[in-house]
Length: 130
Image (tube, rainbow, N blue to C red; front, side):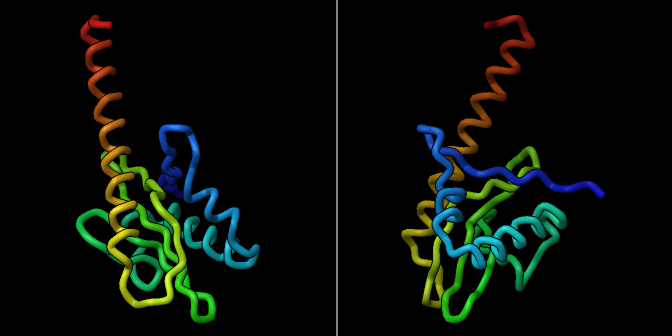
């Protein structure tokens, strides 16, 4: 069975904020969230509520509730059909805070700009331009 690629967003210094956040979680919570990420790799964009839900546009969230705490990982599928894990956080309210959405959007924009730059560089190289 084909699995969907899932990658951690890396910032300009190479740090992976979602991986760092996952490492900071209690072991049980981390294990359950990684199981959700595995479901995403298994089902791809077809994975839906209650495991994932749309936030806005292509920005989605992986959902996990443990007790009263709602754990979330914002992600999107890029044009290579890879799920990019953008931002992890815990929330105690129903709505995702605008600040969390903004982090997700800015990381999504940065990832897409990097993809575009690699794509242009690749097409320049194919045409003999270096």
